[in-house]
Image 1: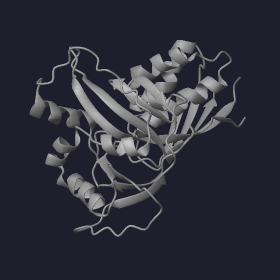
Image 2: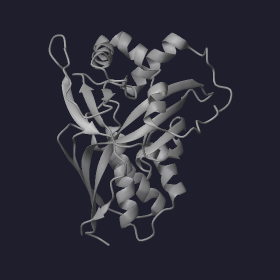
Image 3: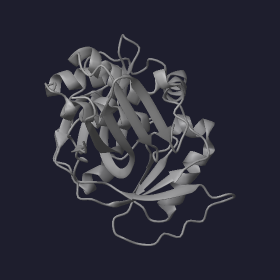
Length: 292
């Protein structure tokens, strides 16, 4: 099996809404969030090799042993007892620390690629268990779901039929926001007022963009904006431009706007304008391609 390889696009995600339902005895905040894959992606190649290596271009991904893609491959090997060696190549396009799930997308893509290459693939449950050990967003991004509600820490998934694809605009501030900081700020403001007692009832309504518009909110947005007013300014700018859905995604710092029709936007930024990326929501999960 040595030398076999697979390529996959690690799609980023949006949180079309994110509610904090309370805090479990474990200390983790309990979420209800709507995940949606988008066209912005990192390119991942996984090769079966004699040693273990990781190469990343496009962004600094930090120490190898802390990289989520590396950790995903190591965790897969521990459970599947295969492969002994691997080489991972990452071409980064998803901003780091932007709330778009870049590291989690890479980890999910590595798990999916290894499972396609494996002589004895793991079942969905086993793969999800590995993913949940790596992070809250990884189970969704290791799954075959395009759109899903995430419960608990985000790892309990309720899939929905894909929403019709829409153009989106991503507003990228010049700074990242760590999830630990965002949830820490939330806890400092809200404490245990909404202390978790039992799992909330999952959302089961049929999804469409009209419902998403009604539900679109992010409970972390206000506390992150208190520390980074640029985020609130970006949301307000998109709203004034006529976008009905404009929110911070995840724990930030990226702000997204969903366009209800193709059009050119005139955005009156104050000061130095942020980086803008045009993308789309997607209706399918990127497939894993065996290339050798």
